[in-house]
Amino acid sequence: MDYHFDFSFLAGHWGELFDGLKVTLTLALAANAMGLVLGFGLCLMAMNRFFLLRWPAQAFIEFFRCTPVLLQIVWFFYCIPMLFNVFIDPIMMGILALGLNLTAFNAEAYRASVQAVPKEHLDASIALGLRSWQRTLYIVLPQALRGAVPVLMTNGISILQQSALVAIVAVADLMYVGRDIATEAYRPLETYSLIALIYFAMSFPIAKLVDMLERRQDAAAAR
Picture (cartoon, rainbow, N blue to C red):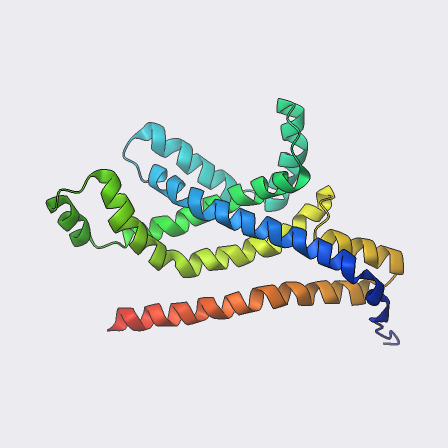
């Protein structure tokens, strides 16, 4: 291969890359905050004994889990303005699309953890006279959150990586900026290699933290 890598041309583009990185982090952090909060509420709805609460939640989860994220992003950006005559800031639209997708996956992570809460704990809370919302807030939520943390963090890494898909609808995130630089400089190998390294640098420490938490949970369960 005669190709010679030359990263020197990127020296004049650090400001653009940093601006794109800020948009990417905004999308990922806001979507994760949305997914963590709404995911638990959706989980409770999906496990509710009342059909009118349970069915819409289950339908929401299955829709977002069983359709491509790219299709969901395109639908939000193009169909919502056409159907409802609502025009939202592109970054907010990206947060909404990614956040709702993450909500569905986090709801399933919470559901598995809620089902793992020992029945004895719930029986004890009932014997103590705690109301339903108190049992949920003080008994179920802390244990479910602790058990679901590794999966929630893994989902968070996934949504960080999937945030690059908003580049297709012209949101100026890291991927979109990188594509512009690669096109302008005719240096796609260097540009996309750098973009990949940036995503790796953000994701790898979280992935190692997830491994550590899983090992600690396994060790605690084995005692």
